[in-house]
Image (cartoon, rainbow, N blue to C red; front, side, top):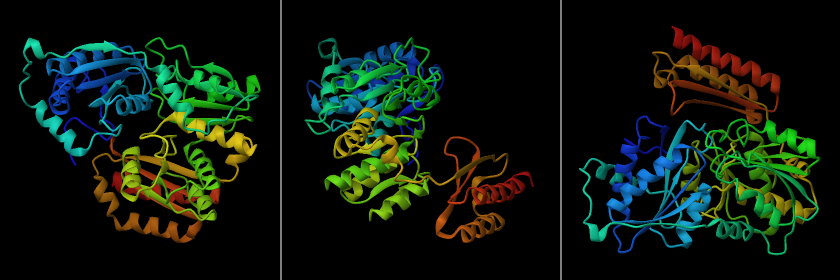
Length: 447
């Protein structure tokens, strides 16, 4: 469904441009208050990450919501999943997070959660967009909303700890935790410390400008070096708003979202708790699909984006899904992707089995994967997708690889690019076939 302001993950953009200006955000807060704050004594929670622009946008949202007669609880810097959890448990009408996730500090965004801690349904987003087109009117003085602050870190820390067995302890385990100079800086190290681990915290000195800057899940090289330097058992890297997770084993090898999803799925199987299939995306590594198949677990794919994974899980009544980027959804533990909760599931499996992260991830062999981005120029994505030459090139590659590989051709959702992805068990074959398909697409683009 087309959206004027909302994307698949709220409203995002470069600060000071388009939808991320103070004027727009004030109006957005008012519209959200008008649609979601219809109950008496309505309350909306607002959290944010550590970007310098968060202060200004928080004030704009506060002004808009209170003008609509909605009370606000300001949480300060808190991970996105913590706001989803607190919205649900504090019985608020909605939760709002000011964050652009893994993007640089110059960007910002606004994410929304419904009263049950889930992303807003399409019809609610449509209603908010329709309200945005109306002139802003303020309620009378007697009905203006109020704002209060709440220190909620302790509540969320205890919730995270409750997602693994009560007697689990990480005593004797040395862990490096990279907080990405983001929203989890004052929470993540304490979660693992209180579980008994020896914690070395990095990326925990936010200054408003250094979020995701060379640290966190998008830059795991910093974590790899720290794990090796300190002789740690493993490393944990979150992104700027704390909903994604990448890990590093004791030898400095990266463990991505596909491997993390595999480990958690195996843990649920061992405990007899895996319900239904596991859900990934079109970009999930074929090695994950094959490894799960060996355990008798069905793997289904959706379009790229956690929203689509969540939709499939809810539709089927399943509980586990995730993306290669590290966005893992454990619906048997919480309502949204949560980097800290996901890391705890992996560490609990390390504790329960006595096997290292390296040993657990070795159960899945990642297939070589080659992704090529081709600029479309003046050619439409549809023209490329429907080209007989391109179809033949893809079909020939699929026949050559058989069940040991796959080809994915898809347009970017945000840029004028065609993405060509080839993966398979034979790395040299992947390189050759990827080059052949990309050349065919490029020839069509250049004419």
